[in-house]
Image (cartoon, rainbow, N blue to C red; front, side, top):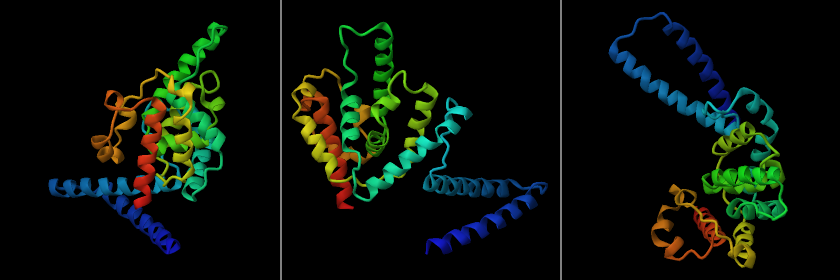
Length: 246
């Protein structure tokens, strides 16, 4: 079925290219311009869907440079592979996932013997953790599965490369989550050291469209969330349950 659809799309693209050539020098009335505007929007939406499907959608942000986009190709493919693994119901890198969730929601720990350079790197890492938490729930899960903390933390990856991967994450197709994910997060919730974390999870990190009905009914900060890790556990459990129903 997909082969037939792809063949039809290929033929249609050839026809569209021919029609566009005919329109290059052809005068258009205001009504025709309006119709073309609508058609152009639909074609753009279709192109975006195909690029998302193939993982070739390039983020529109100006800050993502050509060099970073090219250099990040292997890592972007890695995110696609992680998403495919999750779609098959497998969480193949549980240790990486756990370490990432701990870091993303609690940040790096300061130590008395940290040098100025290490402290500066940890500041960068904290800022990156904040940005990752603003991804969609699916984006956070895929990121935490695809990339080891030592790969994306401060001093290990350029900011352009990080921004490129971050922007690309939202173009990775959303997937249902393996049952291991809420199980791991529940174990993290019981971690005493993580319970002591003073880091607050922002509303932006939680208030995703997918979770609106849960946000209105459940707790947050002073309303009852006991820790950032508990917030993470609740967040992903809610998404997993919602995905399971569909």
